[in-house]
Image (cartoon, rainbow, N blue to C red; front, side, top):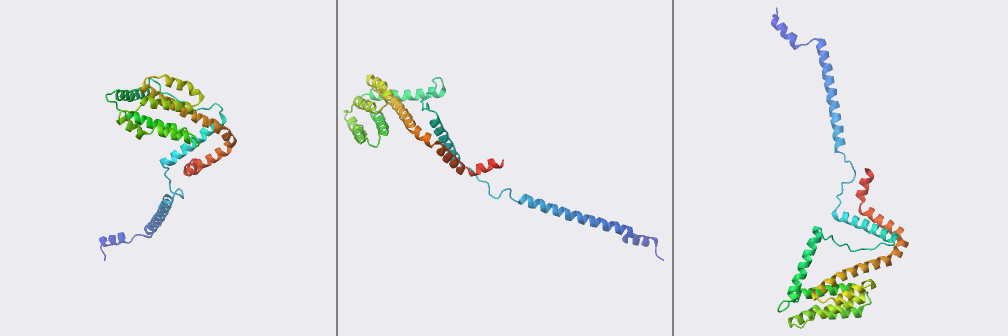
Length: 266
């Protein structure tokens, strides 16, 4: 006859039919849950790994940005020239009481003071003055038209810096004479509006002040030439404005394709 303890052990190892049924249902539910979780994880992984766009992101370089800015600037400038009959370039001076204005004045004054001390030294130092005449020569040549060969040759001959240096070594250079030639040549090349400036240059006695004012008037002559070019181009721009703007705008779009796509997507 079996003991009660053995019977109890058999009862624990062999569950009843109802317990077996509940256990089977629990295992089935757990299996369904695991399948569902694996399916969800697989879908999520697939979605997160799929690319947001078929093309990789493109980095816009600084040169591309600057090229676009230049095209926009040219487009705006051309439009303004064509539609505004009074459009002109103007020389803007820095305010004297501004930091930049004061720094510019101090630096320029120091340069001309050094030149004055060199020319008045004993013996005089001409190297800085010769470099100024070399710069003046290049500016005068920039004003010439392709057909101005005679004046071009004359300017190069008179303002030959190698020859001027040789003369300076023997104390035979005539700085005032060179300045007078420059002023005379400027009178031939300048617009009528600068005639009074040329007369004032001729009346100036101090050679350093003469050289200083020569560069000032040359800057004004550059501005006059730019405005003359604008005036000459205006009728042509007015006739071609629509086509020019269309072409420039297309260039801007071609240079910034990615930026246009991003703007359109947003």
